[in-house]
Length: 153
Image 1 (cartoon, rainbow, N blue to C red):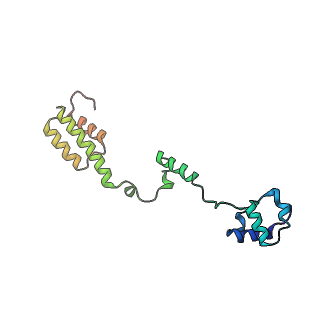
Image 2 (image 1 turned 30 degrees about the vertical axis):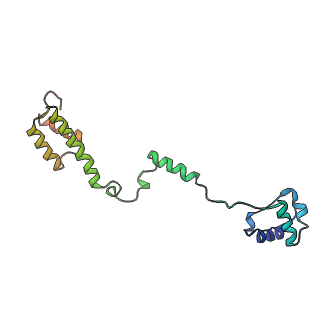
């Protein structure tokens, strides 16, 4: 296997690329060893014995696979989190989600006549004051207060 470093250097200059992007046909290496002028190298380029390789970019395969996993909900553990819990899901959004669910439940109980309007109003105000953690907590409190007759506490 002849030393073609000089030929590779000249080819890089002719092809206007780095030496690492110069491809030399392995079958034609013996003949290329005799090429000493830039004209010889140009002839080899025309013949297709020497070529410029495409630029190698960064593969996006791993990034796409990671994005798919993140879309599924993976990689969201404590080590991946930046920012406080309230910056990731604002306090107001959390409150809105909770209070709307509780108010919807109360309205449904009132419309189906399971609680009277006075109890609805009382528990509506308590919900507004942030007394209940969730719908389930609200139901537990209604049962404990004896406002949902025939249902176990």
